[in-house]
Length: 441
Image 1 (cartoon, rainbow, N blue to C red):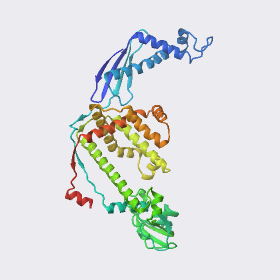
Image 2: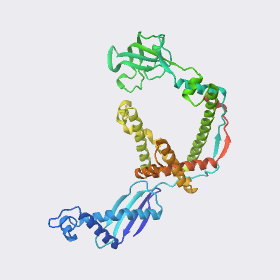
Image 3: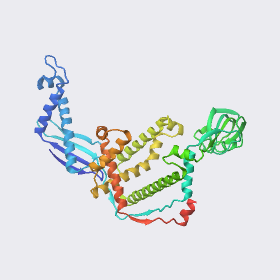
Image 4: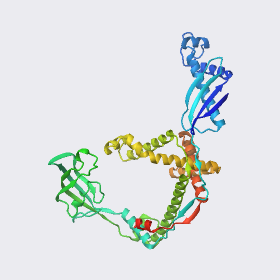
């Protein structure tokens, strides 16, 4: 076999591959042996008919086509491996010539993984935040823990922020009830801003058992066009008001929610956990800065197929998340008044950035000879094995069978590339200027 490679632009190549006639003859025989088992020919047992009889039955064309299929895949794979090409999509194949007594020639046009131009990625300047925890931070975290274990209890006084109210309502526009404007025993969180602006505020101060008239105006960008900018009146009945009741911080409580034996121990372990969490946040911030800085010095032309594949991945993830909430992507599109094309276009900037990030980081890994070793792979698989109570070999075998092994290797290389950027960066203290401080305040 021999071949020629012609580059077409930055990310495409055309391979003209020639397979010698000796290999063609062998492939023709392989094709015959395969097809003869699939065709019933009177007078012959299945798979035993001579080749000339098979050709009389089905013609030579199916045998030639099958032979081409047999030859193309290994010939193409050998060519791209020898040339060190990295395709990102299936090739477009054109058969130039094929016959029983001649060389088999075909062309394969393929989109290649882009080769980015990187600036100096060693010595990137990263700003490190120094966060000192205070007693107030610890108390706030304890209050958040108490809040997570709060109970909603029925109260008799007027509705307040953060209360959960059960209401029945019916809405009218121009004196007429409108579709979707009524519900029975609906649970509404006050302050959630899930209803039309002004609706929740007009319930405050009212008690369970009261009827309230609520007057609001639909926003100009409301998803139902027939209601945009319209004044509406809602007749609302409040059937129940529930309020959050925090548990008391006691030794018994901390034993229930943690491994601490008393309040003092609980405060100390909470502080330690906050310190660890803060350290992780600082590390994550440095890593994010490193990626941002790398992208700033990366010049690359991303093939459209890679962007579309990433958008497809985003859509699959979104559909998976929606399905956990009992929704489908199609239903979400209908509810928001958007189209699938709208969603894909909205995802495009993030997809472009994600692909550029992957390409740039993999280029760093390539230049620095970073590898996903067997130890690295075993470490990641061990984490999954421990979480799922499964044997390590079972996890690795499952990764191979589902095609996720290469994904794991890719993930490890990306992580190592970011580690390399941070380890070789110039770390400087983060100094908040007056404008940033004002924005934060």
